[in-house]
Length: 252
Ligand SMILES: N[C@@H](CCC(=O)N[C@@H](CS)C(=O)NCC(=O)O)C(=O)O
Image 1 (cartoon, rainbow, N blue to C red):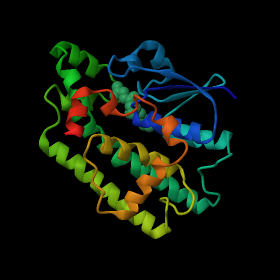
Image 2: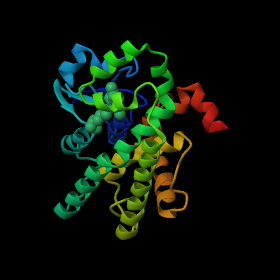
Image 3: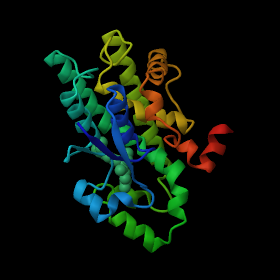
């Protein structure tokens, strides 16, 4: 089985897939796209992924897109070190959590990410260049136009942080209910993998909001101690490693 992953080091969706590949010890060729330069919007890549986003997986020439779909696919074709419960009801619970995660923390985390990390790069662009870039995005056009060159307003930032807080509370409740240490109990599942990059990102931005939730604190420490974590978050995967202005902010 030959795997080629089109992805970006700092992309949270890519990090999910890299984690699963690493945890399963599946070798893969990594094609790194520069998202700020617009590699994901070039016609060659749009033929691979018409959504103009990463990640995309090439498995022996067949293309699979969307990080959580890819993660489930990998668990099916390479079932060793499985992240999927054996029981149908547990699988349904895992998938419901994965949907919640994509709708809540994974979506909300984009607002502080773009405001705090990427905005300065967009502000250097001319208005016309920014508009052309925003309008060329199949999936994120409206998101980019709402952000504009001035960034998301405070109300939007506050709402995103509130949605993230409700996500940590939901994690806390799930861990409490399942007995932990993972969201669904003793076994780490794709739900844990799905939410992990959002917490890593918000921690890297210096605004973690779960210190008063000890179960989530333990969960975060445990996932960072997993053997697949380090190879997934190689140097350049954290925004603070790429953007000097952020480093000053998080250090200070
Ligand atoms: N639902 C998709 C979302 C993918 C996505 O949003 N990818 C981001 C990086 S995490 C991206 O490629 N953004 C490029 C852009 O906004 O132009 C998935 O989970 O794969």
